[in-house]
Amino acid sequence: MLKIFKNHDDDASILDDFDFYEEREKALQENKARQHQQHQPSSIVVEPKKPLAVPTDLVGHITKSFAQAVRLGEAKAVSPSAEKVPGGDSSIPVKPVEVKESGLS
Image (cartoon, rainbow, N blue to C red; front, side, top):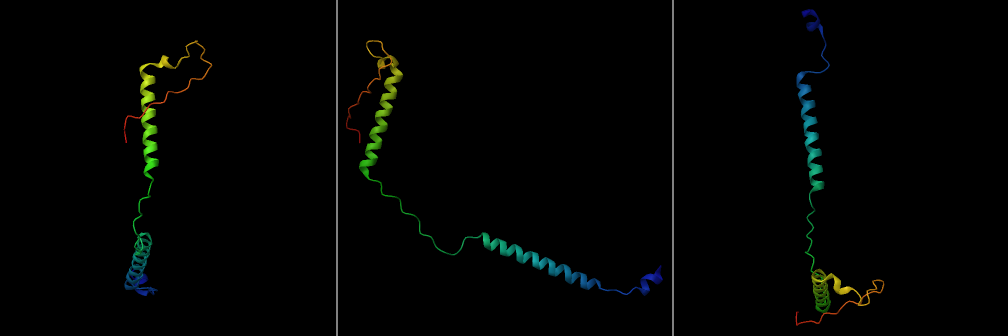
C-alpha cells in the first residue's frame, strides 16, 4: 500500500488546490461587489419634487361640497322619513335640500 502512494505521480499539489480555492473565493467576492454596486443608487442628484399648486377656489369648493354632504348625511340619520313625499308616493324622486353656508372657509 505504501508502494502505491510512493509511486503515484501527482497531477496537482496541495498548494495548487489552495490557489484554486483562493481564486474561486476572489471571483465570488467580485461578483457580490458588482451586484451590490448595481443595486446602489447612482450618484446623480435628484432634486425634490415641488408640490403642485392647487387653486384655492378648487380647494374651497371641495371643502364646501364635503361639508354639505356631511350635513345631509347627519340630517338623514336624524330623520330618514324627511325624504318621503307628502303624498306617500315613493316613486317620485326627492330634490335634495341645499344648505346655506354659514361663513365656513
